[in-house]
Length: 344
Image (cartoon, rainbow, N blue to C red; front, side, top):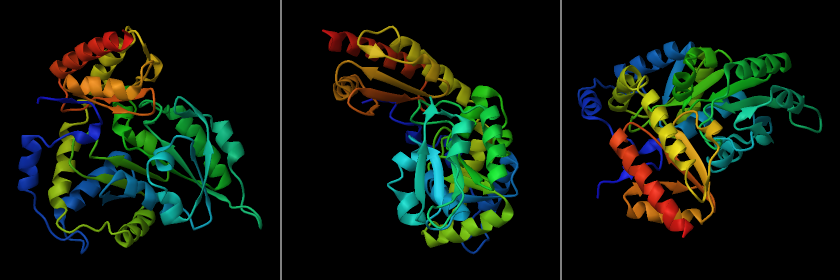
């Protein structure tokens, strides 16, 4: 069946052009440091983010895990959003693998209050852990793909420097933020010690994430990656996809944003649906349903639309390069049908 898959932007498949560069990639052994395509990707990622160095990682989760270990010791405190990916969706990795204490702050639609973060930071004492790292997620997945403004990043960065606290940006979808706002990725990255971004989401690669930062931090990250089993051998096949994506798949993210907005505006007119259009800033659409979300998901599946429920009455739709305008029109029609069906 010809499904329109809106479950996540991780479901994208390499295009024929991407597959071609992967097949023709010059490779070596990356653990031994002689895969030229990986080296080119790392150099490119460092340039894009304005950092000294970068490291090719298997996943965004591993990038975050390694970044935490780079900036902390076991027993240190990490501040992050209540609904941050590292808090909710990384299987307790910060505690299990880095041995850190997580303390959360609240945000408004994914945007933190710098003053709240400042008052949450604490110095190490005989009795308490010291705050060593602040993690910010941009765009913010659980808030609906919302963008943290550069002004907020800048203010948090200044406050963190005053306290000697490092910042890591989980920028899994930072290119979505950049395209939505017109702010260069390197401007966001300038407000952090390290930043990661995913190749396997909106950029359309099959695998991969980049961790970028100062050369000493990335050298330590390379060692931690090896410890976690993330050292890859002929990884140039995958790195070639990343190079292709950075050249060809960034500007087109605007199409994903436009299509997500069309779905959101459709949903705003339907019975039994509540949606906050203010949160639809990039390629994600979260909405709540009066009927159980599981019923909606199944009814949409029967109409060849795939999506995921995020709670008893919450559904997420994610647009990406494998979803065309035709697919969006098909999804919009299915949403109208299901809304009427569930309301009767």
